[in-house]
Length: 325
Image (cartoon, rainbow, N blue to C red):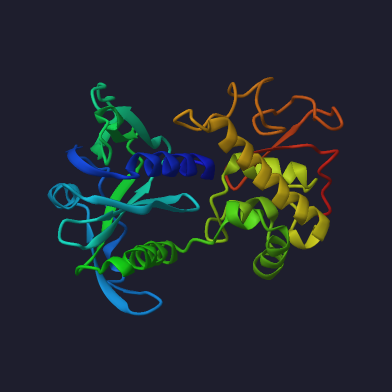
């Protein structure tokens, strides 16, 4: 599964491409990429702050093509929560819709010049005309889905929406999908507020095992194996310990480590078109412990140990991350 920074990078790429533009042409390959959530779990009625409205779900090839043709991207252009993202549009008939995307293991949005060749893994390609007199600013926004684990679908307001309500309705559509997916708080946003992080963990997960809880998307949306390992090392927390066995100071270190590690990944990836983790694993890896089983701990030089927890590989230091269980 992707890590949160990979989804954030795709959302930023899509947002910058869609800004001040409209869709001129599109290429949509009919494939299993286009599938919605289970229909039985979707609610047609969505509540905003001031009203309620009904929505429809589209995922068939023809439906997506008709909605996306000549659609107008709307600011702020994208939303992201955990590993879920959506691009924001207004249809020709003034309805508004979210183009939802779950990237799976290898999905991503990329910017391309309008005359560049399509990558063989491209499943959706939007030719965008910028609202500028300079034709060289025109571009394509392509969705690549190499291993076909990604998903794309549209959730659209059933009726036209007035200009002053567009963003509110789009946010309500997006938030309803976050709720339907049973997603917890966004891990990146929450980790930027250590005091709120402590309060949330103490209330929601105090008696849970830390590693499995960190990977639980219904608790903290967006954390994957890489950042779970890194923030546990920063907090000197054993992966089998429970949150109740950790001090508030350790929880602060955990939040800070998570936020800093994700932020550094985003900084390295800026302008690169994809997430840059460094030169892979090994000596040039930017990570302190992830992927470094058997290597010296960066703090005490003891060999880093390996555990498999809930089917996931976990690398940690037995000396620095002492278990209290």
